[in-house]
Amino acid sequence: MNEKDLLLGPVLSFRGIGKGDVWKVSALVGLKAGAVTPALEVDGKACAAPKELLAINGERYLRYDLSCKVLKNERTVSYGISGGLTWRMTVPGKDFAPRMAYVSCNGFSDPAVMRKLIRTSDAVWEDLLYSHDRELRKEQGAGETKLLDKEQLWHEKRIHDKGLQRFHLMLMGGDQIYFDSIWEDVKALRRWVALPRQAQLEFKVTKALDREIEAYYFGLYKQRWLPSERKPWSSPTATLDASAAMASMPTVMMWDDHDIFDGWGSYSCEMQNSPLFQTMFRHARRAFWVFQMQHALDDLPQQEDTTPAGFSRQDPLLKPIVWSQVLAKDALALPLLDGQPGFTFAYAIGPMAIMAADLRTERSRTQVMGSDTWGQIKHWTDSLESGNAGAQPKSACQHLLLMSSVPVVHPKLPLAELLMDKFGQDHVTDSNADDLKDHWSHDDHEGERKRLLEVFSQLARDKKIRVSLVSGDVHVAVWGTAYRKDLPATETWSQIHQFTSSAVVHPSLMGVMERLFLSWLNNNAKQAQNIDVQYVAEVMPFPGHDKHVMAARNWLALELDMGSAEGCKLWATWRCETEVSFSNHLLAVAAVT
Image 1 (spheres, rainbow, N blue to C red):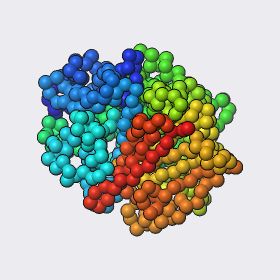
Image 2 (cartoon, one colour):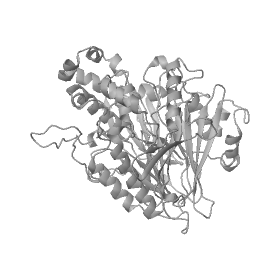
Image 3 (cartoon, one colour):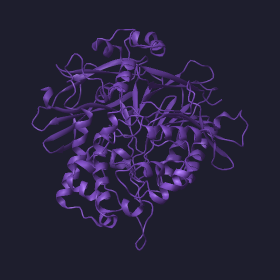
Image 4 (cartoon, rainbow, N blue to C red):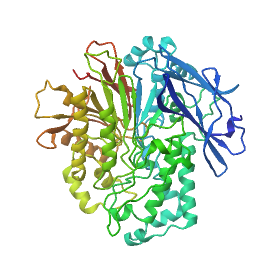
């Protein structure tokens, strides 16, 4: 295969643990329509013929099966094109939890903000990849110690000296791509932005515009995930960016608003249900299904509105989908929860469980997730096999990571909420209002925030499973906790920690007004949020920092220490960008005892 025929990929996706201890991984590859279909190999064996996910506009998108056996010890596995390009990934050993990296906000809303950066747009990706794979450092000509600090060097002997990569998985918590540029790039939408509000609501989408919107959503992934200006894979110093990370770490992806467009779900009911917004969401959903979920477009069911006749709706009322039936013939199907209209899915991997919650499909100003989704989340957590310090640490789940694209614990800004509720209405190019309305801590979502804490606190209490949250979205790094204030401190199961890591590309708060906002944010963060008579949410002082909110681009490492007799301890390490390097901020969360 000619490398010029490669339009996108490989993008690895983790599909779970299969029967017989199979580490299930797929790879998305995009090709020009006339290109020869490449034969891929994994672990020295030929892959089966790929499944075609999409054919559109002279392009084909294929999914390969890179699954391989989980052995007693972890190992690095090579994969690639037979006789051509090769890549590597690392598979954990039997009964061991995967080491994970977490990122969010891989892009930007406004190109102007990127000019404020002191370092390159991919500097944080480069740091993550240097931490992940020593071979990449060698290929880039980087000195073995020059680029490494104390925290990174700690991993050399236990991982890199064994020929392994640091991370088995990469969790991508939202905004893997930014579609906000659609409002400027599509001329009809640029004109729509300037229309009076009533004309916007009544705007009819022509067939030609529908095709243009579809082409934009399906076309931008290849432009952003394998940019033509980057150095090719065959270069001895290939570009270290998102595409390099997605080719060397199987991903777990869940969308957020920018994967649709900025603020989706937090506009007024009338605007959300307008013909234009519904058209854009439909195509964003289809593109997300193919490129991030790695499923065939033909397998995606249409959404069905179940609003009773004669009633208007404030929140989306959508028919639940029995995903196990829809995807019954797909051996690489994601473990989507049955009986929900969205894309929430979950895995259990030895002592670790991961749940990726879909906070966009059913979102409105007054709803984050619908009742069917909440019911299925509760059903899945009830079925989770648990372990505790009294059992063998490797035998069952001790930690559950909930991926919530929007932070559950974040400084609350009641005055700003009040002002935005009164004056911030449906401006697609102004994100201030919708950003506040998105938050779990907004008054309109407080009831669901309590529901989340109830569901996962009950899991922690009944099954002795430590629940932690990983979030992004807000372009700062934050450590938060939620806990039951009506219990003694010895009841540690009630403590839910949240690690907010954001952003990997988008600049943090840098301008003069943003710095003033940061000061306000830090001041508000000092106040604990009494959700009700039982629950408190509190933003903690950021580890190794003199403030509660760390304004820097960053990524997060999540690793289980399985050597303790008291159960697995989860280490969270933020790597935060500075003007010349990166700072390390460590936090340890013990298992429930």
